[in-house]
Image (cartoon, rainbow, N blue to C red; front, top):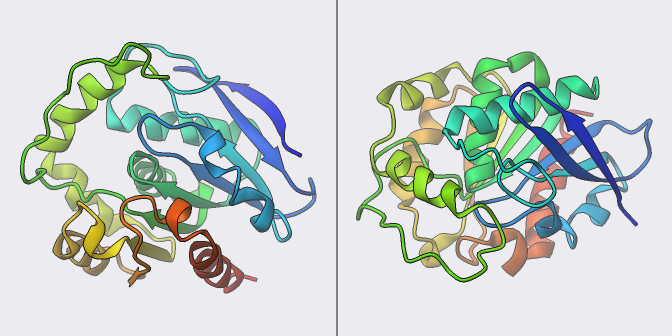
Length: 230
């Protein structure tokens, strides 16, 4: 059973679900665009055997604030504020897709907060090919649609400095690719893994939602990687 908590930050109040023992080492999970911390409900209980697990709702999602501003660096600032607000650092940080983008900003700008980093299907900071488009807004998207509107241009034309800065990541890093069913080019993730000083790339398969389509393999890979820090 998880517990819902909130942390008030400088840019937004961030909500999260918590599992595990308070004295266990902290692990923070970050979901992708359009999801919420609930996306990790099948995964978190398995990880809670070793860690105190926090599944964050990113800004514009779930129970966190929907402030209407969604620059990639702001997602990282929120997560850093959440970790610092609870006095958790350094943490193991696991991010899927947009959550992986946020996690990279934390690792670059607040290396003191990150012990080990896992990037599941996280887009590299290179222009999306083909360029993404914003589809018509659904009647009830379940999150702040403005996040989608603002994120698409950042994926299509990312700041070149963002890609350069991943070379400053000091945390041991595991990149997970979803295989041939992923829409992310393997070459982009290979380049990112080569640029991050202590990183390796593995392929699990299952497409963009590895943790949902291959949960057992995902948990095993994450657990093995994080336990290396013990």
